[in-house]
Image 1: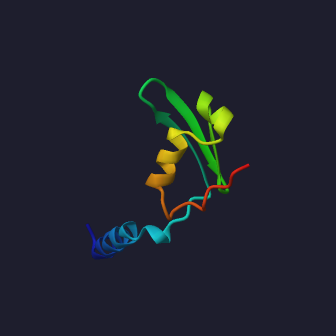
Image 2: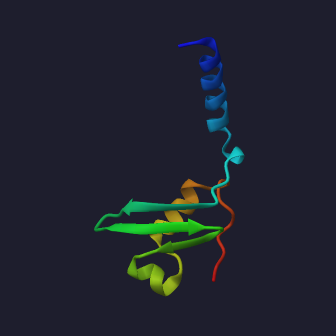
Image 3: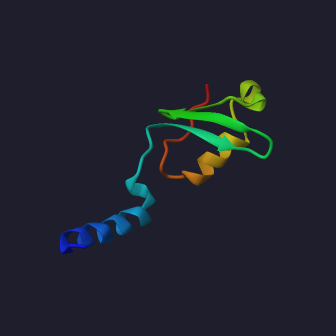
Length: 80
């Protein structure tokens, strides 16, 4: 490994430790729930999930788990 790459790796490690450097704008993922897989999306502060609970409450365990996991890396959730 060359010295330039070693320096970049060290910088990347420092960046990864500072969650405030990251701001997710949108993403699309598969959430492996206890009973089923769920399709969850996030776009500009708005979550969407294909589970039944989300359809009636606009929040669910899947979206709230992501809010906790990504704290300070997403904008505060917008409620429609």
